[in-house]
Image (cartoon, one colour):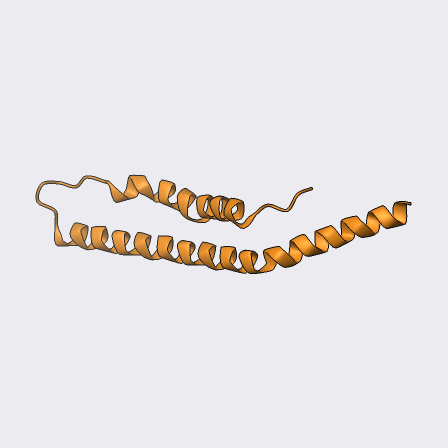
Length: 93
């Protein structure tokens, strides 16, 4: 089993943590209201937009942090995998 590279992990995490919530929130962000919206409807629109932005920003920051940690740990993981492979071949002789 190969260890995926940081770019592959970044692609998967951004798709899972940013793409899916964005796709789920998309219909709610483009709702149409009447021509003359009430103050409550305008407040709901602003609150939903701000909440959606905050949620997607949080998901993006979490994904970026996880990818950064993985990128820092990736050389260690690859080194350990190579060491384990070398030990297996020596034990197998």
